[in-house]
Length: 275
Image: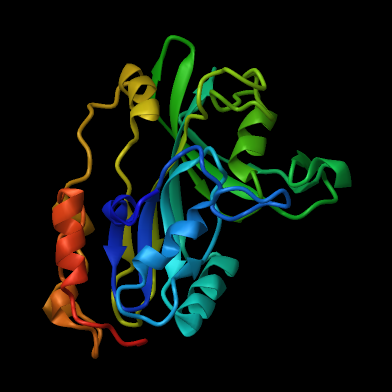
């Protein structure tokens, strides 16, 4: 990915945190076998700070949507602590095969690693780590269901394992679902929204990622009207809401701006301090 391309995927930016729209099909960090990863492109997101941002959490290779980055060491430690203690709200949109009979509910199924030879593949295990997910039906069509999923815990592959265990695997899941190992539909799982209580005495920062094309088709079949987020919904905090010490020039509409123009505007922002 070019610097312009990674900057064009920026959804939110302030002095402590970035949220980017992760594309499906690329790992967020290098695995044991190496290879390209999204982290390779983080130097383009420094914006005047001495080091690139770092991952505050993970998304699967085939999952798209909101990915939170800490801009420096103290910010990353704070974000990691919020994730670890379940303080950050996350909503995923998924299209599943079949679907629940009810309109909403909660899954409480403990999970553990499948075995040491399967990397991070997981399984339901009564003796494993407690794992909870709430879900709500957003639409149905032709044997498919559009779900909003909120993981209350952050286990690896949690949503994929939970949905499969309930009998409604996520469309395109070639590990826990019915998709072929190669050549099938892409995973229909999108990290739609994050809600981050980053600053005291302020409402959580809410960031929404637009639906990618490979998910939009199935969502529309299930009743999504196709309306998506606009630039105003992902603005960096206005000057009147800004944290003391945060440059006012950060209040830029970062979504919906052509990539080249956005790069120019961001490059022109003065060097930022590590708040």
